[in-house]
Length: 114
Image 1 (cartoon, helix red, strand yellow):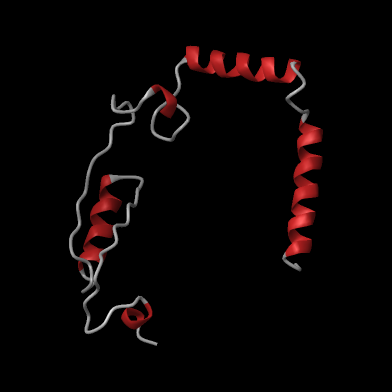
Image 2 (cartoon, one colour):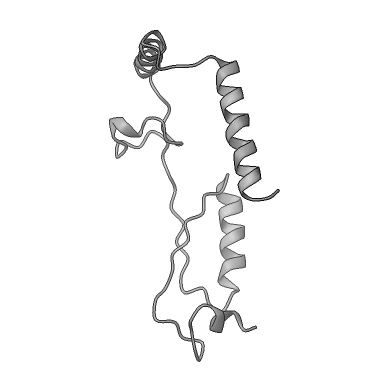
């Protein structure tokens, strides 16, 4: 089957383009990947951007996202919140979490007949 036809395209033209965002470990590999991608006929453009892990565009709520290390104060806040939840009875031990996860996994396997 023609891959363009399976995507709803005809005559090598599609009505909409897609964007793929890929992160690589270093600039050398980024250049190598860009050369490979540029050799593909259907790739329209390649743009390499350097990222700064301490970029100020991250917001406070983004501290758990990759690329921005949390400060000591943020770690302390997270631990205090977790402790308060546990003391309020909202948390669970590692054994309870493991048991609950295994139960959910067994139910999922049964539903999917695996």
